[in-house]
Length: 110
Image (cartoon, rainbow, N blue to C red; front, side, top):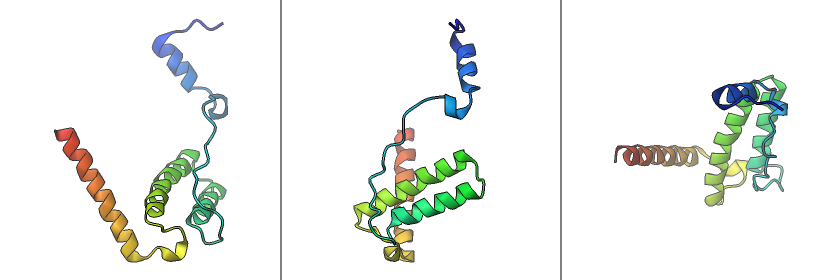
């Protein structure tokens, strides 16, 4: 049994290979993939193309996280297909992100 404690133990655990770290299995995201032009299908293809081009796993996961945020926002507005995403829709999403960011900053400042 390993008796290392505290920070030394945390460092030792962090040095393990990613596949040996354990953790939770990925949960399904719940996005609609029933049609070929579903946004989630586009997301899957994009992330697969990043993986094929040897992007770092952390980069792919970060982009998955950010794009899932967009897909969730779009799903709230019944935008589930690629053809529904237009420039004005993207501009509205950008404004929404900016407003969220401003709200976070004002909460921090009190």
